Image 1 (cartoon, helix red, strand yellow):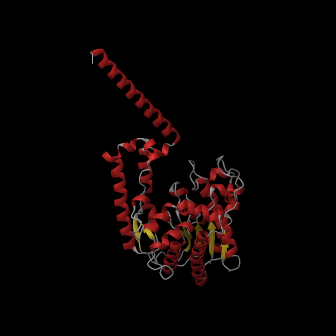
Image 2 (cartoon, helix red, strand yellow):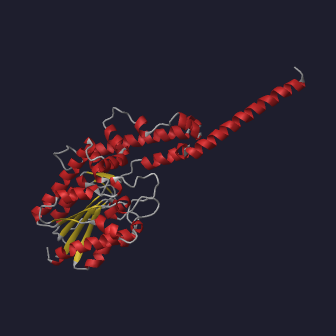
Length: 376
């Protein structure tokens, strides 16, 4: 073979390689444009978000810690002041707004120094935890009123947390050793997934089109399916789907199970407050889609979940008769606001803004004033 022929072979090989590379680059560009979630960076970001991050497991309150996760119960030696208890999850805690702008702090300023407002709330709490909070606080101090803010995620969380109870239906306590064991296994599993994605094995995962053809491992595919913690992990990752099912499919067996469980825990709170003679106010946190038309063209304006706060209705029906129980019409109050969208944080957040907390405080204050003023 002459020199010219050799050059021709090399030229064709280089040209073919350039064409192949060009096709791969073009396909990768299209894959990333159509499926940005398939990039390795997006996959690693999702794994980081999924990681289990409770501050510390707790036998009574499932998860606690410092800062926003702390529960500041009265000492029992705080004097004769009237007290109001606020119980809930991240909405009552005040996720996304400054401490002095949260409705608990606003209510404290409105009621003045003669009344103490105790906010006993933390992210991802639910009625299975609320009942223990109410019991601990009522065992410690006298209250003029208790206000429990139930969230749309609570039915799902109660279903998930049942796996952590020492004995469901028989115990109010959580199995800390079980939770710590799950934390360790989850951490090892996530570390293994990340290691495979970042190491030599993960070189091909740099290509989104590879991840579309051969999906990368997830916590459910990597976690041992025969492990005792698998049901908890599976339910936790399905949390938002459980919220959807609860709102949209009232006759679904999973909805029936969630509803039965959450109402049993709420009944226990109601019974404890009635025994103590403490007025109980109940609210079901309204989300944006309960109070304002959807802006996403993919959402169906006629879907009942967009216009009805089903959880609030359940509370109204169940507790219409017992004395000393008041359901706060938060959804109605939010709908009356001249700019309902302003009641929520931006960026697709479900939590309330400063304006939202101010509206909650006004509505709660109106319901509380006759109770606190009567000296109850």
